[in-house]
Image (cartoon, rainbow, N blue to C red; front, side, top):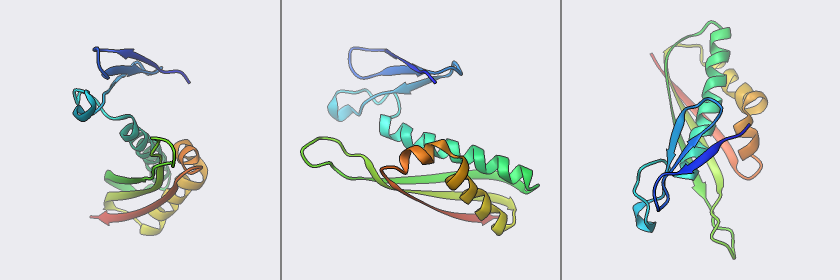
Length: 140
């Protein structure tokens, strides 16, 4: 896998593009001279995690013939400063899935567990340094 970043301005705004050809804007906060013209890099990590596990869960629920109408996620990450550096990696991440549809809760739980334990590469990558937990709710 390869991505390219191209600087857009003289500050921190970049356009990133991968093999899909879709552009993603990345920028820093205004507090350090950015222009708020894109997502922050650490936000993108959480977004990537959410996207990866969501795709898995949707595919699994489709195979289970579940009537999924909608899916939203709320992902919260807690960061911790590494002593002697400015690095603040995620140490705890919680993914809360909000499903809509006539779904079997046991099948939903199984789909999430399969994603977290067997399929989601982003989970595998981030779980080396952060405890990843999940929860869900189903609204009909």
